[in-house]
Image 1 (cartoon, rainbow, N blue to C red):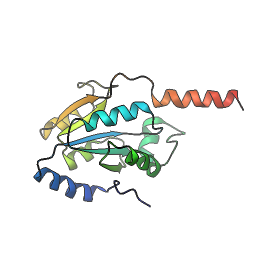
Image 2: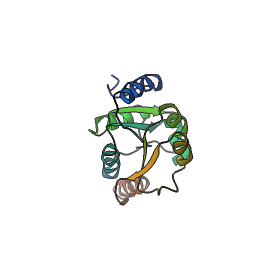
Image 3: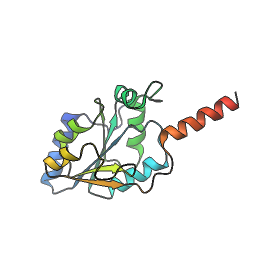
Length: 163
């Protein structure tokens, strides 16, 4: 069963248009979310605090493989999107299939594009796209404690030690 928050691009465009007419501030956050952890929850709750509606873009499987390498993702996109939909901060979730989020930004034109604290406003790859339609980039989530990659490596080392 598809989580009710999970939407395709066509449906999200209609939803965003309706929300804009109602004067709502739209925030878009995105990521691979290959292994949901506390840093992701801080990122998403921080993003939600920037507006009225939070849309979370989840990288598709091929996109994650391109970005993170062989052996990733750990879970298929549908499972990752389902977990994100279960986090209270997310109002809508979309799986996007390209390795960057620029097409999604151009289509939805969120007021705010939220990125995690591993970025600065000047290092966000999509900043020019966001600026081109009048949006803004915001960095949220507090200082990065551990990356997903580090957590996965720790689990793998533990598994080898205890095999």
